[in-house]
Length: 131
Image (cartoon, helix red, strand yellow):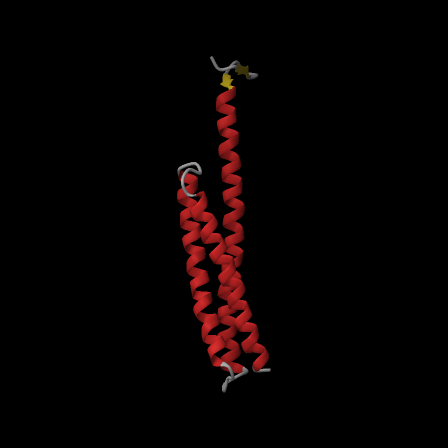
């Protein structure tokens, strides 16, 4: 039989219920943190993409190493899509209380972060070549 804690106004709460609530709260807090982190990276990826278009239009109308720019754009688009997929899977993960989707989230997160870093690398190579 579960132990019972009494509350001030006479209601009772099971310790099992409070443990389940704290586990859910912890899961929701972690999910919120990861969602905010992914949103930040998405904002950076989108901003970098837009900034590179502006750079190309205003500063480097005759670009050198345009292949690096095309690569960075393609990888930024992939990174943005991975971020959106991550947010969707995270929503599903939270709705089923963390079952089944942990490994999938880890794999998507790895690809998402790696693609962002690689896109920045190619964008920097393009930028340096066109200064």
